[in-house]
Image (tube, rainbow, N blue to C red):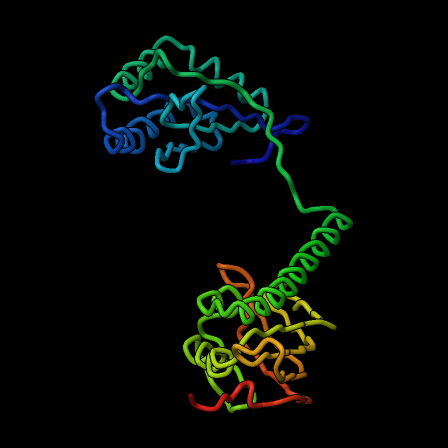
Length: 282
């Protein structure tokens, strides 16, 4: 489409068009594209840009109050108002109007056709201040997701809800809990159960969390202290075993949410009775 004439503004018209009863959608689209649209182009050269938008029923937002009663939204653009007025005058010419009407009988429910001129606006780039606020909000939301993930992990351990590890860790994670390099959810689950299935109640406290969100806003690293107390099974007043260390994690934003893709657990001190985690055989 050429630019508007000096002193003029582009004009856009919209036509809401209903398919002729009994005509399949495939036949409707094929006839419009191969017969009717070329005819309109030939008879009404004032149209600068001519687009057809066919309604996709599977993706429509329906309303119980107002049903979608058209099958195509056609857009017609004109260089300026004077060009649009020439289009209207030409379309009213008896010979041209008759040719268009005769062809439309093969295609449309003509009584349902609606056409009108619209004023078009568009949202451009966000102002600098708004863009910065939006980015800050994205960072804050990511940081909160990481912190929530660490808190959720502590509760997964203490409730021994092993199936919920997937709410925190990616299926393709790698990790080192001080026992060497390992990978995958099955290995992580086995590592947790190796100790926690053998002891009684536990409580994992995670704090002093530092989170850094990557510049792509799709990745993050976190460091968090962990203090874990383990009680001997079936002995609520018996010995305990405490471990203290740090979780060093790398996170990625996956379709299902933020997930840990790499964990290194660095243990710094232990106290109490390690037999809590290694009970003697019955």
